[in-house]
Length: 387
Image (spheres, one colour):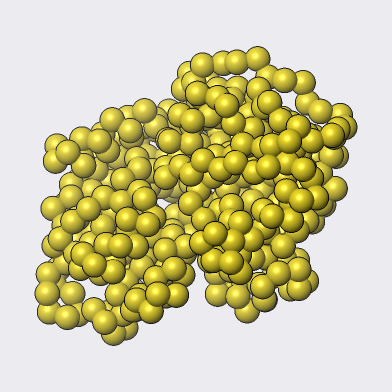
């Protein structure tokens, strides 16, 4: 993580060509009366009002206290989040690291005045100045949740937890004696190239990969070659969490990279699944609530950012999604359902094992020249298409 923490400014500069620039509103110096609503782009499961499960609701009390109605647009990939923020009409986005720097460089989000967020002091020190929302000492968001991309597996197929990601990358017979062809999945975002690179870091150290987001031409080619092998195994590339859930229930899928969110919902439905971080480690996400440069409802947006840190949200979302709160005290202070044991189970102690999503750029720290993200986008489309 220390290496990645030094690259935020260079990355943001290099990404400045990725989105058109817009004039950013001046940073607020005080929070005024709410405008009546706040419009948020969010990952599935991130903003709950008790409609999916009445026990999980961190919206209703906020609306009652603030007078700000929460409107949510679900996005399934980081690229979709960037596209929606480029279109406009939203106040906030829960952006992962492979989107946040693009949004900063494209001037689609504005600096956040942390003095207007009283609970900022409670944020995990490992996240306060993280490079995916901090550029030149300026904060462009409020940490929300973080966690690993786990290997989800069917426990009837795997009587013991798989120890390697090879079950989704290489053709083999699984413990039930059947091939893995057509029974595994992969994420359909270009950032999945980093999962292949993470695997190669462990199994082919001679490639010299230092970061799965910083690949020279040879390293990049090796990752694409591995993904082309995976293409022959994958029954479906997923990006919709609920479609993946259905595939594990009804379509015979037994292993895939996934999020703890799907694992928890499947377990709740008594589907025989579990998850693991294999020996190679994992990529992961550290998500940030970021404010649109032209947010129409900035007062409600600031109220929501404070609510996201000070209410039951951090604790209950940690339970609901299987993620880790950006406020460590939410694991133990009783504000919601989470416990210290629950946070440990979610990987709170695995921070150093996770290579958090960030956007690849051409000028990189580990080796000078790297393959930039626009190549990842076009080449991964080719891989999925069988090229």
